[in-house]
Image (tube, rainbow, N blue to C red; front, side, top):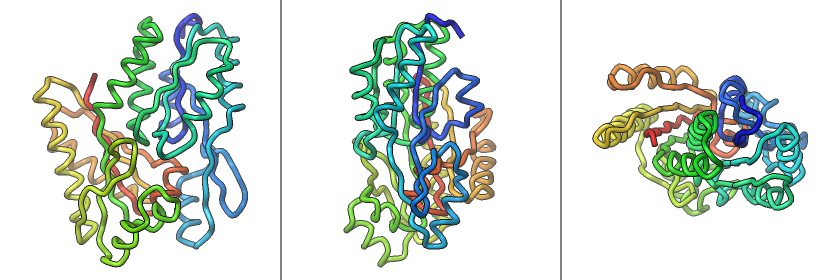
Length: 287
C-alpha cells in the first residue's frame, strides 16, 4: 500500500473479518464486550460465546472505544506516512463510537474525516471496503469519503430476531415495541432507518421470517439491477450458521448476477444487542 495515501479506518462492528480488512488495507478499531464483568476487545471474543452467555442468563454489555484508542490509531497512521484518514463507523444514534472518533480527530496530527454510516454490520463494512478501494486507486480524502457515504446510503439491511428482549433491554429499540413483540410471540423483521433500529414487519414463524428476508433481498437486487448497479450481499447471523448458509445458497441460485453471498457472524457487540438466533441480510448496490 502506498504510504502517502489515504488510510481507511472502521470499527469492529462492521463485522469485517480481520483477513478481509487486512487484505483491503482497512484498519479495525475494536469495541468492547463485557461478559459477567470481564471486558475484552470484541475482536478477541467469538460471537458464539456471546450467544451462549445470553442463553445462560449471564449479563452481557458493551462499550465503545475511548478517544485514546482512536488517537493512538490516527497517530500511528500519521507516523506511517499517510496524509489523511477517512474513519467510518456505526450509527451515532446507536453508539458513542463516532463521538469518540470525532474527539480524537480534532487533535490528530493529520486530517481525519469521520463518517457516520447511519447503520451497522456490513453496511459499514462494505462502505469501508469501497473507500479503501478508492484510496488504493489514488483517490483524495474527499473522493474516498464521498465513496464511503454513497455506498452506505445505497445499502439496506434487514434482520430477523427471535425476540426483542435484548434490544429492548439495551435501549436500542423502543421498550413498548419490545413488550408488544414479546407478548405476541412473533418473529420480528427489523431494519435501520434514520440511523435507528425500526420494526419493518412481523411474521409468525422462523421459516416465514427467512422466506421474507429472501424476498426482500431479491427485490432489492432487482431495483439495483434496474439502475445498472452491481450488488454485494452479506448474510449475518448469531449462532445460526446453517440457516444463513442455506439462505445464501438459495439467493445465489435465484440471483444469477451474484457470484457469491458472503456469510459472516454478526460482530460480538452487535450480537449482544440482537440476541441468539438472529439472521440478517445486507444488500449493497455498487456506487
